[in-house]
Length: 237
Image 1 (cartoon, helix red, strand yellow):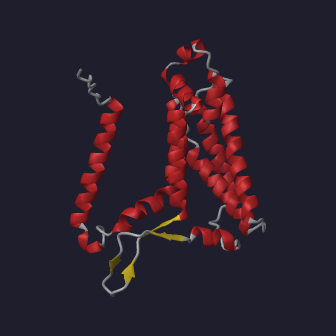
Image 2 (image 1 turned 30 degrees about the vertical axis):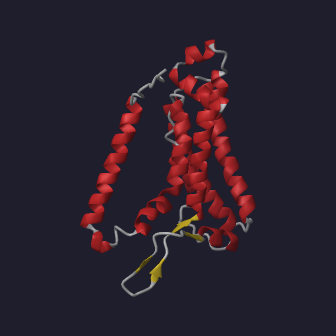
Image 3 (image 1 turned 60 degrees about the horizontal axis):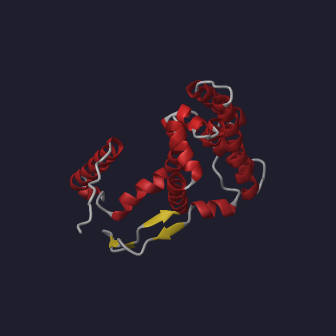
């Protein structure tokens, strides 16, 4: 008895993902060829994409959750600026230790999410309007705290953690001066990848993840299935 083999069809989202990956590969290979003398083909150059954009990866993971529910959040940039400015000001100008400063920054981010989520979910205000107001508020509060660039140097623990290099056991090469160069990533890359994996597992294998997709697909259907649509939206933000 022959087993029935079902052919999996590529969905529209899957096709767009394949196109995006293909374009990235083509453009990166083209860059390796054109800028080979600039070191573009070196492994570290590729890893620098993650080092420079680790924060954006974490932000994108959070914004993905909001967009799955059919919402939008344009305040993420201003909120990021605000929590970073609070973090730097507390450690550099107020003498607060790194642990307490990070906790305060996280609480500010959570407060922003709760307020904006409540306005969107329970008061039915358009998410664009709510997050637009949040964007201006975050930007204004950042300027109120400090208008100058603040470099963190007081907290040795924070500085050493930020400058920590995690060497990789592959991709080593010798530069023009005969010095062995070992590819590395920062601790921020590890954190970003862990967040990405956790968000993926949450969306795919948890009840909350399925609720997000249900709300984003059809709110009326989600209500008939007995889901708490308003609470799901609040948690998403």
